[in-house]
Length: 185
Length: 136
Image (cartoon, rainbow over all chains, first blue to last red):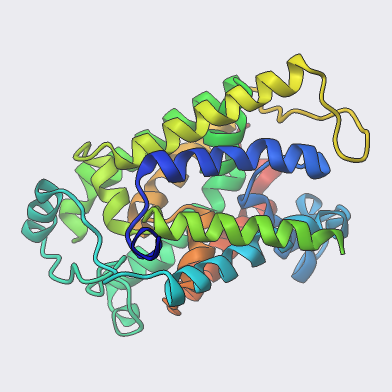
């Protein structure tokens, strides 16, 4: 049991658990699984100004903020008490592709080469952490949902908009990975 | 008090995202390079379980615990799904994180991701500012 907790979980354990969030949230409170909405609620709470997109009763959406607060705590619990060596067992091909692009640190979940306070002052760090973050926020709200809201929740209810959005997520991801990353890494 | 339930669901979600390495930039790179089944297995089986659950909820006309009819998630098609989706995809491959994992990564102690979260919020805010001028 302890080994199972410390080891990375296989897809067939994690995927169904994520999928179960969809009916659980619907049955417990008529809520649709979706994380990127929380970013909108935080904006509406902190700096709505007179922007129309932020004029709504964010207080009715507190459940969503509790949910993402839980995700932070869940990350803490898993990171502190349920962690093996923290090394991610990605495929050999991925390691060699990324090594060829100059990534050296494979010791944890994220490459320290790119994601650290020190690299924040480099152009590369700014592109990955700052510009990347901006695109995630801008894009998910423009698309009206992210991986959870569209690809899990929306696709589970066979929504055309979610299918189009999910394909578009992949188009963007493939363009970045194969056409742009070689120039910025 | 009701929000405690959602906090607990969130904790479970954060643990699963971490333990299945969904929060790993390496796993996202591996996915976009088609070099492992892992992420496809996670997303695919999550959709299968979600879809079967929704079919069952509809078939048996299940109500919420408060006795309300369930509002199933509606995401009609519009062009914004394409434009926004591509922009998000570009950012997903850079950060290796969609919004859920951004929060879980911070929980895992990668403090610098607070910066990524801040700029994601700025992105949302700028979207709000420009919304009426953008094609939808």
